[in-house]
Length: 102
Image 1 (cartoon, helix red, strand yellow):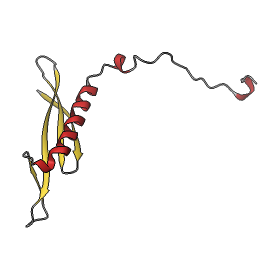
Image 2 (cartoon, helix red, strand yellow):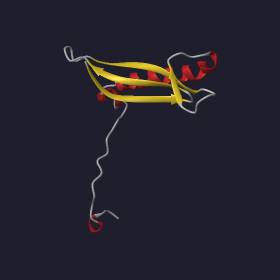
Image 3 (cartoon, helix red, strand yellow):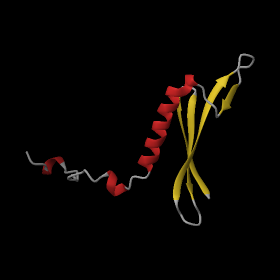
Image 4 (tube, one colour):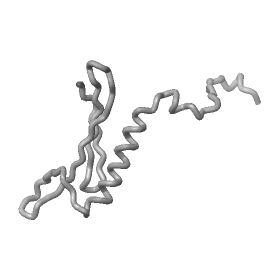
């Protein structure tokens, strides 16, 4: 399996790391994600990280989960689907001023 880009989404002290993975054998693309909480202890200014959460983190964790699922869903949108609601295309060309209609 091959890892592609890594995306981080944060909401305060709660975050997620999202990685797109491509299975080399099947060429299947999928995402794995890991939630994390950062904090400082009273005895150190050093940031620490944990994958456990408390009720104080519940709202932020919910927001990060929603953002994660939205990011993943949008990453699977096919280009033709992304533009399916476009009803027309305007091609803009540069016309010299002396040839423009008045």
